[in-house]
Image (cartoon, rainbow, N blue to C red; front, side, top):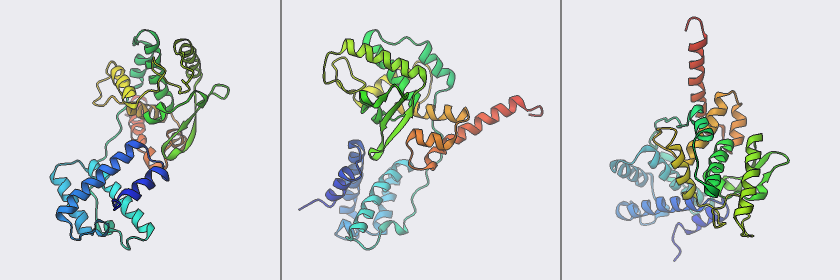
Length: 296
């Protein structure tokens, strides 16, 4: 007998093109609800769960002291599942219709100050040989483009258009976008590829960023590299590749970039996701105001 979540997970994988990481997260959240439902469900069929079942589950998550953000992520997975069942005609009512989800406290994205990035790219000493060249190009690309870690590791050499000074990125939902590259980034990519060609003899190294053996980088390896170098220039609680994405967006906004342009560069599907960076821009404007206004 087919598991009730099987067709939904297949839909996410083959039609929505969700990443393996996201699929695993959805599956874990759904299985967690299923385990709860088996013990406390008001019906015998999980597809017919009621708003009472959903509320009881949320209360149990809150009792376990999960954050509102984590709870809402799990709720999102479950909502998508029942929406899928509605679309297929397997249920006639959505159990979340009478459920109010926990509010997420607003949290501004952390980012590296401009001086910190200057120190990192101009004064920090990277490792010797090919490893150091690779590590630095990873940091530079993430900061110069704002791309996600998952997008970085999927880059191929032919995604770089040196003539037009741009790079093609495959984002969420297999959506492609083009990100411009500044002159210095183009030059450093040329230098990196020359080193790569000399160092890596593997003819299969079509992936843009390869380790010493010619293999594509793993997301975990990228995380380790970024964490190592961000630790040298700032004291942020988080030092992940996503911090460089936040830094890219914040620096653009603080220097007057149009929010719609930043949205396109980041590959956001809606403007709401990009608007969080306007808070940092307002802080910057307040700072300028205090320094420049005669009465401030």
